[in-house]
Image (cartoon, rainbow, N blue to C red; front, side):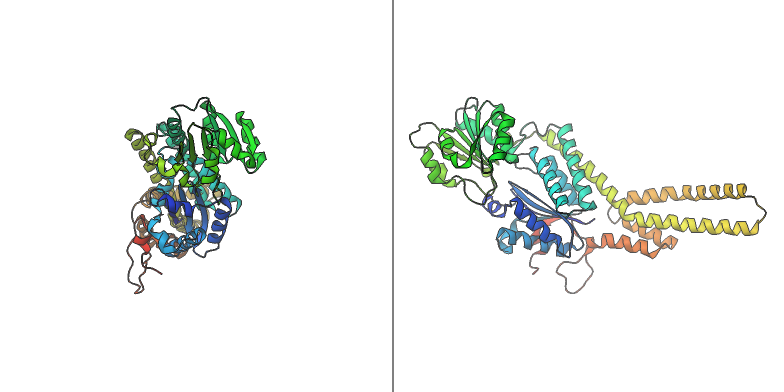
Length: 460
């Protein structure tokens, strides 16, 4: 496996750019299928949330994989590659594994410790499975990442301060309208995962919730689960005029709440309205915050929110778990990479044992079958005992820097099957490619994390 992550997130790009890069499910499908057709991409999955778009790929060529992913991502977003690349980060091999584990653990979220990302990554995996663009490599990685995320949330208190972006946003909204959501009227626009979570939090806080969704059946289903009210999308204006808080996260391609609509809702009312826009691209126009008594909260407003802070002790504990799990996962992958050499070594030992047993039968033709069988068992047991420690150590050392050289040394010492060592080289050569090096000079090992420009800057 040569896993690669190319992404743009709240850590590297302004919200205005994230708005343009944000993808709805149909666009995600188009991007995934397009990338899957690339000769450099063997498997691919896209995680698209309100504050990140990340492409996870198992690639055959690092350079080609990075270029293909970045160019297609820019094309899908309608952005020139040169405009996008300063905000793109690249992770690969061990650092890619660590990044995904950080993501599922909530360590890389805008609100550290939020749990919604687990469901979003799980959904990305499900979609890639449905579209048949993911195989064993990425499937094993993502399944492990989901388990790691659950473990972090179970064993640490990282999610106590802020369970989600929604929780922090609604805490801010409550402050804007008097300090409590209890007894307030709330309009939730949309019935997806984020909107459902918002409606749940509002209901538990004692708010009276109305849900407006383009697909009435989905709105009704959500409303019934919460004892809320569902309305047709075209009736949203009247509900807006009655609301104290509006939460919108539809994933639509256009603006849902423009200045004119909100201004009309504020006519003849003297109480404040807080609009919480958690969508990317935005569902509301920023200009609505200029309307008297209207407050607008968006993703950019959340980065410095008090609820976004988690204790250093919990973060340290979470990072320790992630480091432990990364080492274990990399060890498994490294062991898989040297497996052809292990198999070849044992096959070579079997050949030697078989040859020696045949020579023994020729020299001692009178030996009975039972005795011959006991000789064979003893000889094979002795050889197996001798090989056990070297093979175990080889798998352990394979996870270290240049660890596969131990496997290559065994190949040379025991004159193993050339096919086994060719498989080993094929699985590791990608780490030593030369980028933008037309001279063909010897390439140096590359690190595990960098920006696009650091790795591929100037490469056309």
